[in-house]
Length: 622
Image (cartoon, rainbow, N blue to C red; front, side):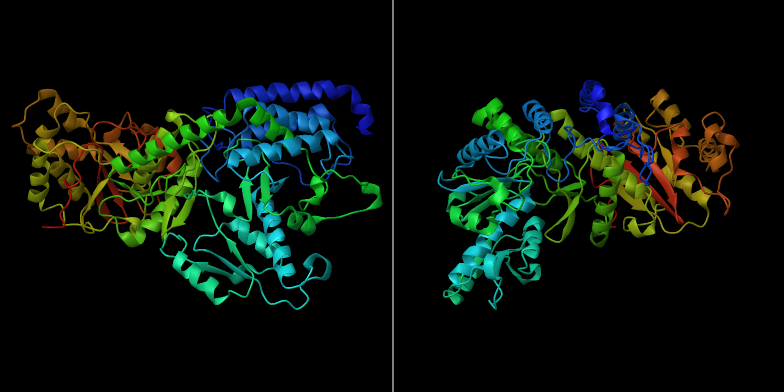
């Protein structure tokens, strides 16, 4: 297609196409996988010489976006503390693109400038900041921190008689910057961009979580009482919240988080307006002169999108009470997740749920402490790959942990309930498929079955509590087939304890499961607590304990007894064929009781999932 002018007639059709596809996309976003499992069509990297026109280009873009974009605007995206676009904010954001205003000053766009002026005043009121403070809308927290620290740098230079914006540092000593043990990465990036040296930040931490050491801070300030000092405090980032923001000299805030305006939106507020204007002031004859504030001279950008439209529309549509109701709902949902974490014996909460972030990790009983970080990193990767919910890992107090953040306006109870369910399921699967480096600490060999029998017997009188994962590993096997029969027999030695429950055994050879359910079903059918495993039953079970070869996986369901007992050295089951086997892999469903047996790297591992007291397989005292 030649000059874009020839595409003028397609403008309305292009907007209609985008709007109709957006409606379809948003209609399914509540239940869609957060990260699609396809990468989408590959995009050509070479610049085309001839264009294909707006409608064809948009059709390609829509197809690629549908298959490849994360559903970050949806209710189950708990990563990066990202909100979504409310109806008011999304509509206003579309208008901002349509109007295409440059929000530099009142000459370039009086409409955008007035909306930003009103929006900044409303935001100061919402955050409890004094009305005389200066403020500006930025692209996000990084630029908000940049603007605030630029104002601090100007103050610091003037305290020593130097106008840094005009003369540079002019031989000034390094700036003293103090912060807590945890300083947000956006602040560090801003410090680096301002030439202040990110490695010169002095961190004063009173504990492993990075909380600020106020006594140490007071001591440093006394030592440097003749020197201007910049302090970077961190509040409301992942697990902090403070009162008294009005006592700060500047505040940096993200809007595309809890305010739920579309990306990108942030705000910088500074107590003394002269420092912000002095740090970013610029003039040229073509820019004009106006007594009213030029927001392009209060921040780093002069070419500025009219981000105030989405901010103004959000605050006008929902008001203070609507924002409060959303925040309170999210805090309740975070408390709900925290309670679910506390109730799960294989999860450990690492911090109080003070706001909207829940910090926890997967910690199955008996798992080696020095391997937990690797295990949780792997589960974090699996959560992102799985796509039902979306959140990553962090490090808290030296431990790798999950930190889902609940900020999206769409999020409900059913969405957050998937957090714990998904982590526990994928955690069990990670252990079942793990190599020897991630296996639980070996306990006593299962040939000594009296301890196991006694543990099972305690089930008769012990209250049932949910245990997602308990592990007992035997020593390296000599006879694979013999040991599998033994494990099967021991687990079912007291089958009467499980009558009335949905019991099914699975044999898992990484990663292929094979059902071994025949004798179990027979016991359940006859309901005979006194019936033990006779020799013929053991033989029958042995027939069912068969390890598949990959190419025969699709026939296991119908002909389980026709498959060889062990894999040859050149055969490796494929993970993507596990679903073809006539039973469920670990974690895909949750019966009342589920046992599994895994053969991996010369060890036999028994997994016990759900509704079993945690000490059933505890042989540590034997």
